[in-house]
Length: 279
Image (cartoon, rainbow, N blue to C red; front, side):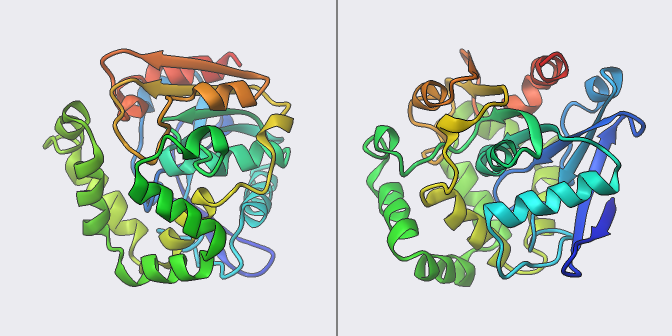
């Protein structure tokens, strides 16, 4: 694990794998997760990619940021890349990490973006009407009562609660993968690390991701590759599997897999990283 001090004195931490001498790739993990759960280690090394999996503020080894926003996140990653003496880098966002990766593209911190089983802009008219009502209610609250929703999540969420929610929202194929003896301990450890400082970091991330995004993805100029498995049953990812999202982003490419769920970050890591390496 590496870390730097931000300009305001916070610790910003990350895990990494792949080729330590290669160009960085910024990875934005899923909801509530520290960056300690790897994917595609072998192919990353073969492709000479250095995957930097960053703990968002308040999760894992990164100090809380009471003013955390998409703008502050972009500033943090800009500072990290400066520390690594690296130019704008590719970014990958998984699940709730997707809008954080897009924010890097909008800020010019990322020069290309890959979204894997990504959370869509759930407040957008093309998507909001497709949501189950409980999710739609949360999305509306994120827009109209963000502080109240954040406080409610922070007071109730735990790593175990999030794990059981992920299990309950996943289809049979994803459940068998996530709950397997080969995978579940590492996934649950990443969630436990993500919640080591409490639920406040996760709560802020959830409100930011569910509220209307402050950047316009229609204005993105960097290449964006969107990846979904058509067996992904999560109600907080993308109900149309990226169709509207890809239309809104002019430079987007959409890849969808039959008979795959949200676990494509691991089951299709070779495809995802190979495409990113040639973007």
